[in-house]
Image (cartoon, rainbow, N blue to C red; front, side, top):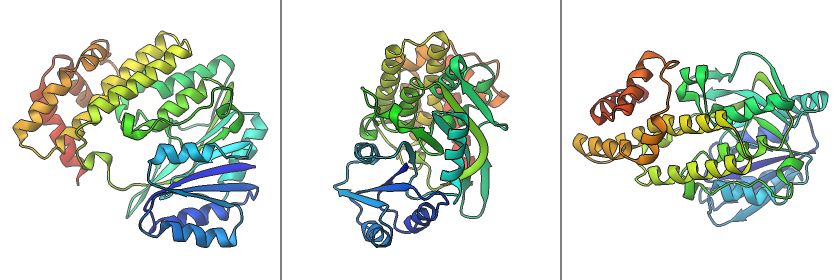
Length: 345
């Protein structure tokens, strides 16, 4: 059996497409655990209508507590040998469960990963982590594990895709590794801001011995508003807590120097997201400049970026991170304004 976990919060316009893609899977032995996280828009009514005609749908409904709590509550009751996560405004191809499970059984793998389609209003664009099917096993699993922590060497050529590997969706997990003596659970996004997926995957990859990736776009990720479209004043503090949680996990797993460098590179590259967040602050350009200056002066970023190699970055990112290295808030602010304008088109 595959347990599919779907956190639901105010997604009534998109929820039927998501649920249709799940109940119509060619693989039928499913339990679909939908956690209604205090929706106020009719999402719960939609869930109940679907549950009336498909007994595989289980509904948990409670007050709003956030996506991490929703996933954790569902994890506490999963019965399947395999676990999959689908966000309620996304959808999957009808053969996803069958194809992923067949690969898992064929290769005796502990996780199956696949590519996805970015679904914009007027177009669909594929996103491939790497172009060819790949298997990691034995000692080589550490390469995948480290990649989820952060990029090193040639991987730094695309800093904007750092977290693509770490999504919780687009994967089929063996449930037994999630529910070992020390169960893996999600940290509340109200504490760490975001990227709770990465923490989960860092913990999970440290327990397994074989992973398989296929360049098949079975998952459809609906691209809406970016998280940077509204300013989050406490995001720098929350991300520092996120980095602390990652560091704790690396220490617990006693991981080596490549992992530490990947971790430091993650912190350095995080300046992009944090900087873009400051560009949406409701303040003057001078105020945004001061916020970027304060960000660059935080010790955690100064320490991490000191050891960041610029060798593999394309020219525009070389300029960006060189400016960060020499603590030039003017240059960083100018480049972030340019990025912001380009992404708004």
